[in-house]
Length: 152
Length: 274
Ligand SMILES: Cc1cc2nc3c(=O)[nH]c(=O)nc-3n(C[C@H](O)[C@H](O)[C@H](O)COP(=O)(O)OP(=O)(O)OC[C@H]3O[C@@H](n4cnc5c(N)ncnc54)[C@H](O)[C@@H]3O)c2cc1C
Ligand code: FES
Ligand code: FES
Image (cartoon, rainbow over all chains, first blue to last red; front, side):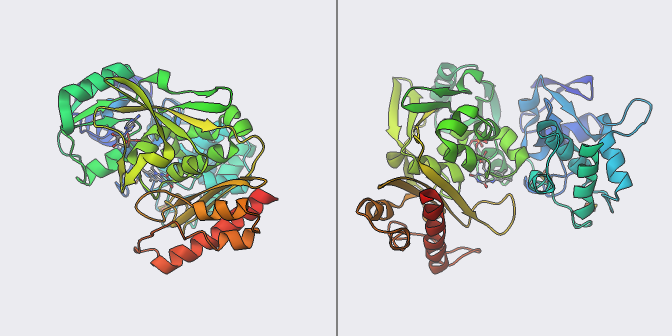
């Protein structure tokens, strides 16, 4: 089936099998490998992207469901001149990552969270990121980064 | 993990979806948010040969005040149920229960109709709408019919819907100021409940729905009967497992589930009675 998905502002048209997952489309058809696959069972959030502005787990969406939609991935967050998105900068400044595997998904989930709730409490940040697992940081500095970004 | 191959068709209206279901027979399945179906298909626990995508039937996404009840379109996403001002005012228990479904990413995709039609006793909204005395509206080739939540759940992942029927609307009576509480016990954030309780109370009237206490969502009728006859919360809550037939699994034995049901019902009713 032919689908068109606008990813980070560029329209991508491809003929895909209906069973193609959106994360596969992003990584394999379009070649944007910043979006990671962690669990592949909808649990870890590593594959989080924005679908029409909201965070979703792209391992649990079929590419055909995103036909006609606008997707933002981690590659679409920094400005064209390379200036990091404020959330990316906050993660860097607050040591919100160690191995970095969860980070693209964390940044996408966190920006979606702030879009819905621009000044969350620490508790709301922890609950808001419940769909994203991190095996390294213990979450503390991730929460700190999101709070710092919200305050800035 | 990739699902087995299937054909994909898109419906732009309820009528078109019903016609497509009729055309493709038992092999076809509806796809709403896909957050129960796609994981099952990836695990190859479900292998429909045709998916009828109703995710774009936008006129089935709404929350409306309909007088004595609130009408919710089946395609309304969990996030929109959670954030609905109409539900916050008239059925706050349901809005709050929706906020406990999975995580924000799941709630951005999953729909109330998909959650009910999936008929998973471990899910939050079947037991919650059961406690609230909701009625579901199903549309098929011969028109629409109403199904009481109490008659809808027939077995594990089995509902009263026919293969060519679509859930279109959920009608939930207004709570009219009743006290309420939703208690969800789990060990990891974002998980399904090991046991959950949705309860409301207005004087001697009450409704208590149990999550994950059997092969279907359970209405704790004995608890409400006790409240109606003037029992105090502790005595009523002691009856919480009487209508349930829970199973043991990795997380809990039968006895532990019964214990949780009584404790959580006690907490829920105390909060609802305050
Ligand atoms: C990581 C994760 C965590 C979750 N945690 C929870 C949780 O804590 N609590 C909870 O309650 N749920 C949880 N869920 C399930 C979630 O609520 C699903 O969104 C919901 O169960 C299914 O809704 P859907 O729109 O995605 O349905 P789909 O997956 O599209 O469909 C589910 C089933 O219903 C049928 N169907 C869908 N819509 C209709 C309709 N209108 N009429 C007739 N049949 C229809 C489909 O054919 C399919 O058989 C979780 C899901 C995930 C992935
Ligand atoms: S890879 Fe999608 S949630 Fe883990
Ligand atoms: S930084 Fe390693 S998983 Fe989060």
